[in-house]
Image (cartoon, rainbow, N blue to C red; front, side):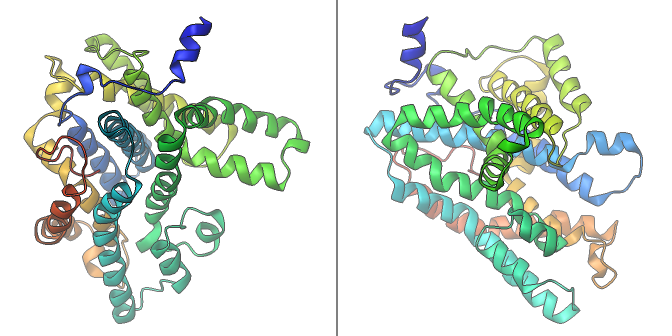
Length: 368
């Protein structure tokens, strides 16, 4: 037992066959599901409580986080195995080319529209979005603007990836300890803080409430590490297990507001999402695999980042901005991301691929 635990923290020196591929089936399809959940939630075309259980925007973002953590960790570990290191320069250049161009284009457009239509967007919100610090509670509590509100999730991702590749490159043991702490120990600390006020002082409170935001991404990272280590095996999920996993993801009802209960509930949802990710990485005959690999869902998944960025503009339901009204906004939610992706983002994606150090083949699962 001790040897198994010890081996878990040793550097990874090989890539399992299931991950030794350039394209991971189903990930784009799962992204497609995620962005549809977010957009339909933001449209708010029904006040039925069941509507908001199925189309829970925070759940959609959480699924994105799990996928992101899994895929980016997998790519970084593969690079380290193949080249014996991780090029931090190339990693950050890839992130910048993937995330920044359309994000800053959107911010510029919002600034222009704010000047023309007097949308009431504060300069603090613009600065926070541009610096990727919109997730800090002070900004969200006092300077929340709908048009830039979705930058909270981008901020969490970029802050996580500012730190994680460095620790993965320098010390795998520390990297794994950090993931295990965020996923398993931090919820316990938050529970203890709720019971013992002495543990809930300013420093510990800020520490736990900041790092718990990385929970879902860390779950995705752990699933990747566990597959590399052979702790998890990729096998087709039995249809009954698949139904139960999906049922519990929605039944638990992801809670975007911080609480002790939400911390544990959301962790379970992230773990269940991780099983869906790894259960559909390789080709199989399951209905879920076939559904996630539908061409239309794959296409939506490829556009998911573009849709996520631009949909906020057209779901504001602002009387000052008529094209944010339902149902005319649906046209813009479809058309603008397509224009953005094919006429703007693809140029930067081609540049991004030049900074990949593994398998110089066509890019896999483009949005990351």
